Amino acid sequence: MALPSGDIRFSQIISEYGGSARFSHYIRGGSYVPNTARNAAISASVSGLRVSQFRNTSRVVPGSVTIYSSQGFTWPYYNQIIFYTYGAGGGGGGGARYDRNGWYFSGQNGSPGGESYVQLNGFNHGSTGGAGGAANNGGQGGFGSGYNGNSNSYGGGGTGGAGESYGGNGGSGYRVVNFGDGTGFTPGTISWISVGLGGAGGGHGGWEFGAPYGYASAGGNGWVTISWA
Image (cartoon, rainbow, N blue to C red; front, side):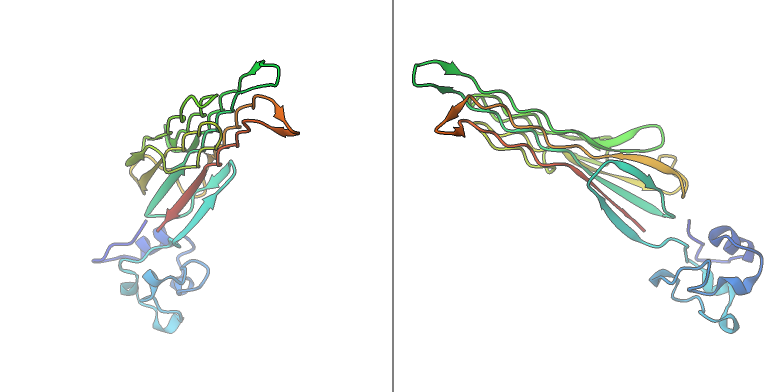
C-alpha cells in the first residue's frame, strides 16, 4: 500500500491511487491523492507534476478511532493498523448481613465483565473481562487477559466494581496488522468489533435503615482503540 522509493512507473501510480490513466488527475489534494505529510513532494498543480514525485508516497490517510460500543468497522487504506483491545471489569461482590433477629442474609458474587475483541482474517484478537468479586468479602475477582495479540496483559482494561470485594479488571492487549500479511482485510471490508460491558455488582444482603447493606457496583465497560498509518 505504498509506492517504492526507487524507480517508479505510471502504472504503479494508478494501482496505488486508483482512477483513470490521465496523469493530470493525480495532483496532491485532488480526487485521488490525499494531501498528507507523506505526499508533500507531489505537486498540487498539473504543471509541476512529475512521476518521480510519487516515490515512497501512499494513498493512506493516517487516523485513529476509539470504539465504546459493539459495531462494524470499515477497514481503511493502511500500511499498518494496530488494534488495542480492553476487556470490561467484573462487578463487585455483594456483602452479607444479620438482621436484628439474627437471621443471616448472604450477598451474591459479582458478574464477570464482557470480552472485547476484533474480528480478523480467520481468528479474533481480544481481551477477556475481569471476574466478579466473591460475595461476603470472599476475595477480589481475577483479572482478564489479552489473547492472540503481539502483547497480551492481565488487567489494564475496565476497572472492577467495588463492594465487599472488588471485581477484577478487564484484560488488555494489542495486535499489529501489516497490509498483505494475511491477517487483515482489504480496504472497504467491514469486520465486527465487540465491546464488553461491565459485570453487574453482586446482590446485597438486605436493607438497613432504608438503604442496601453490602451494595456492590458494576465494573467499567471495555473499549477498543484502532490506529492506522
